[in-house]
Length: 96
Image (cartoon, rainbow, N blue to C red):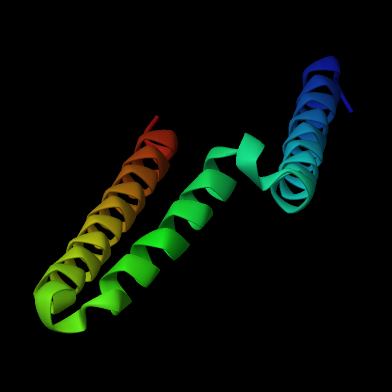
């Protein structure tokens, strides 16, 4: 194994280990201190929003459906963009 291959192995492994450690730390923060993370604050606000929409369903029904539709469309767009960028990176990596 050459020096470059050893360096690649060490750096890739340490990068994956750092990513896993960060995600375990983030899960711990979300569970123990949800108000100190964006994910926890969004979850709390989402619960309040659902309660507000359910209080007067006849008035807020259309708003709730449109909001859910917009969220689905946004997530679909972001997923398509991520797949396209990943494919583009894969193509660029295979070109000499």
